[in-house]
Length: 91
Image (cartoon, rainbow, N blue to C red; front, side, top):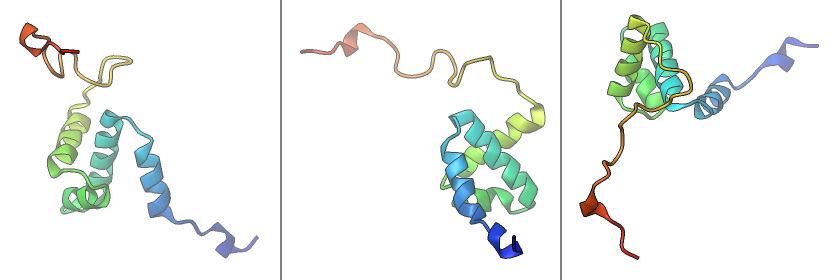
């Protein structure tokens, strides 16, 4: 096989891979890529994956502090709209 047979569109495959991840894993993967790129990495990665800068920074914080999430949990417990009698749905 020739060397040219092994040329791939890395950016395309990277974005596909990124789209298959959960929210937490997306955040941490983006942070890892930003740390790889260096000083302006957060800005570049946020543009590449079309996410907010704070999301990448939060992922960096999670990686640096080595925060281990509870098993089989994607979102924090207690998140979302609170159950309240005033928010009853009328049919």
